[in-house]
Length: 114
Length: 114
Image (cartoon, rainbow over all chains, first blue to last red; front, side, top):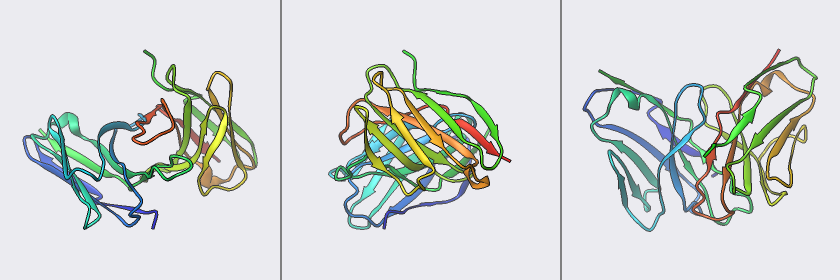
């Protein structure tokens, strides 16, 4: 129940295209859903995050769509650029946690072709 | 401002040895979390410390321990190393212990156990 599932495992997109990564969770106590971007040799960096009281959040070319009833959320990268090539992780956390242990998905390796 | 720093960058140990990893949080951040990231997987929560007290522990054996110092820096110790402990160990800091909790990750320490 603590798992966060993520798909696809890898994604290849042409420059200018839309990249879509999907995540699903079981624990209805999760109430914070961040997305992280990780480049090789670097730690994950927070991209964008959403709370379940909204269905969509947009920051620049990055949009999170959230479906509470389906327990799913997705990351959309518009106008994908070669510089977006990285591994993306969805995560979930609950404010009821004694410790703020984020549960991460297994990651999606995105390659944007020039 | 300096981000989260970790030392050492890389470390090679043999089975049965002990290792200590160090983390300095962003200035003013009082919460430090440790994660283990095995190659090709998402980070897994190990510990969280806040104001020098353990606030959360993941599903890791007692060989793993940590502490936080008065200046909020932290150490992760792993005893009796196993081959399976080979991973990238990430430290994340955050300002306060609440949700939404924006965690900032360091570059990690790459531990190889031979």
